[in-house]
Image (cartoon, rainbow, N blue to C red):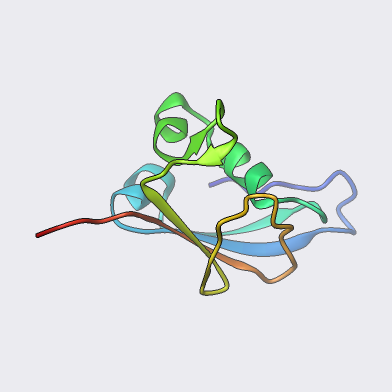
Length: 101
């Protein structure tokens, strides 16, 4: 995953994004990133979706929401609102929802 460099390199935040299970194959495992202050989780997801394949499993542009079969954690807490503003040092974990029986 390529880091997102802010326009002004002196003002940026560092976050870590980790994908699990099948998503790790598509997006890579863990990646530190530099992002612009004020970036929301929605903006991050859009940025990560660099191909149709990625977009199909992670983010629904039509609805403006994450795919319903994806669970997102921010600093270990489940996130339901994609307008959540990221903060310096955040850890974002993205899991496919697993089922079984």
